[in-house]
Length: 81
Image (cartoon, rainbow, N blue to C red; front, side, top):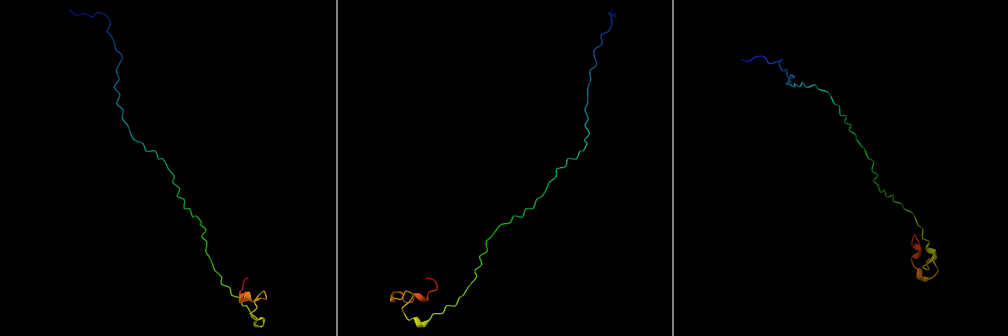
């Protein structure tokens, strides 16, 4: 009943691929540089130097003062004019 009709038909093979993964460690180096910065800040330091001077007042000039008239009485005793 059934007979061989001709040559058999051959289909191309089908592939079933199974992928397996194996981890491999590759080191990646990230260098970190720590910088310590020392910033110099100028801060003024006020130093007061006391000075003293001796002024001699000649009593022989009288009360006339520095200009020779009575309007400047006591003006001659000042250190600065």
